[in-house]
Image (cartoon, rainbow, N blue to C red; front, side):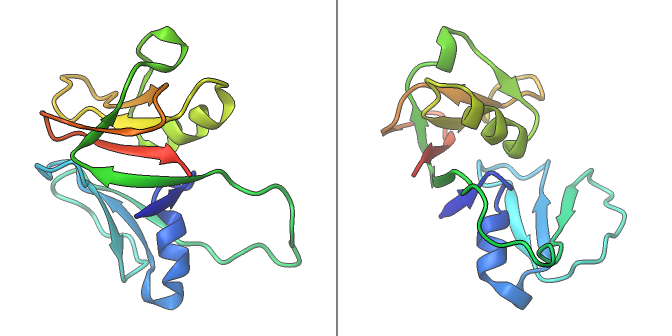
Length: 141
């Protein structure tokens, strides 16, 4: 799957009217916690899910800087931390936005088994490596 810095919003946008937004399923056991949703109405979540509603494109805006694109894959990690130490974020969007600004960041890895809420980490590596712990990673495309 290909994602943009707007989380999985790029995939949602490509689906046009069939996708109304993205939901982060906090309690989902796998690394693929982000799901595309048909509806775009917010509803109270008993399990603490977070959702983003797809907005219409701005009127009259064309061109501008291209967003960095990422390619995601389950069951893999990217080697080494960008900047030499662990930088964790609570959301994929936060991590991808920061990765775009860090020179040696090759992508983001979701550390599924990390105890804290900051499971999305900036990584230096640019090639997927098989993960023994079921991580998921996004590499700059």
